Image (cartoon, rainbow, N blue to C red; front, side):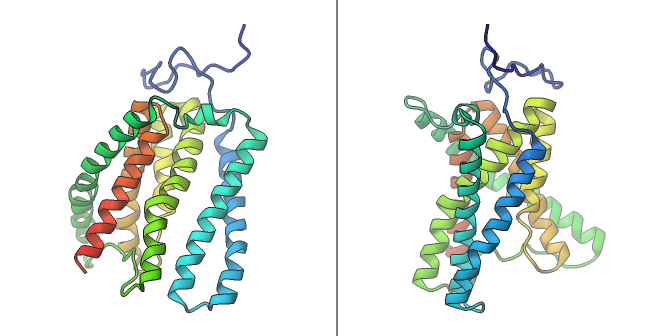
Length: 258
């Protein structure tokens, strides 16, 4: 008889779903442990950026970009170290890409990302903009996410970060780790909302509070959408491809209209 824990029936009535065909094992980590590890990784990332600013200068725009990359890679490294040491077999639980299926999952995720972008930015963003402006009486605009007048090196670093590093790191934690930790215990809806709110919060950009709120609310919706495609496809490749596609479209539009 298998000793692997079985995911209990979900309160939303969708059990069993694509993530647990035949009753697969639930995530062996809890959301409290996940949050604690992420906080530890965040602190380690801050320490890792100190040499970058010390050598390149705190006022350097390139230093800020490089520091962002270093911080993201540090967080990924801490997460992978924790999973490999404390949760053997995590690749199967997270549903990392497997031969013979990853391409179809990635294709589905990419198509989902293409459709998600206009819905999130134009429809949801537009509605939120009107509501926030009506509630506050202030003008509202999304914070600038890509610095102006980037050098060729800075632009390269930005593209690599937005298209490769950020999607992998964010999907690994917010969908692969946090969403699974909550969803496997409390159901899809709670998992999607909880992980999406956390995903929205980490997209805070300093500036006017109302502008920051607009971006974070839109990204909360996007995070829930990524959880949905992960749930439907039952594979990490799907939300990862959706995230990459979403970022590629956004970055291309930002650079094209400058």
